[in-house]
Image 1 (tube, rainbow, N blue to C red):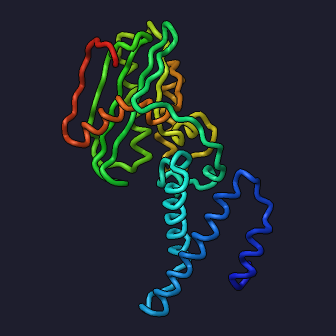
Image 2 (cartoon, one colour):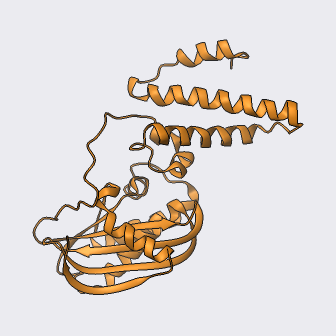
Image 3 (cartoon, rainbow, N blue to C red):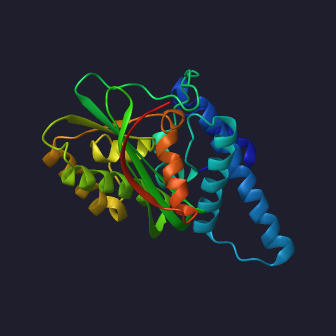
Length: 252
């Protein structure tokens, strides 16, 4: 590794990085250098200890916040980036996002079960919510439950797991095919084996995978703008206003 900034910059720019990854690659360079500079000042002027692992963690968090600010569509979750930064290297061309509050109707004979989770902070009071609607947009079931304290990614898996268990008990289990939709892309990728999940989440991922397969449910990613109803229900639980309603109502 080069020992001075000029050599480090030359080495960094000489690496064979794909064009689509260049923006993030350049951002990473400045995040590392700026973090080292700040830590160096702390050591010299405030007599702090130099800890290599802390430099790495601080750099990762700083880069995550910078990238989320620069590319909010690609970096929806900073905690997901910190866990698996290698999944966030590519900046795609701007994708047209659906309008806020939009929801696409399912094909005839298929139900949609939208789920979401909400955490008060990165690790705090957790709420999960979900709503089942049929191909006409009629609400068949909705739930909102506070489930204690969880990590922000683990709770997204908990929401999917809760949806599977509710579906297993529902009257529609043997009548309709169903798609579970979540706006947590990382959870979808873990469950569908698109990428390897960290060991701490392996048990939850396996439970979700087992129930989805056993019940014949399909799991799909949907943008937050199309998952507003489930998000509102999850927020209600965080605000200590949980609700579990069965009904039939035309969605707006």
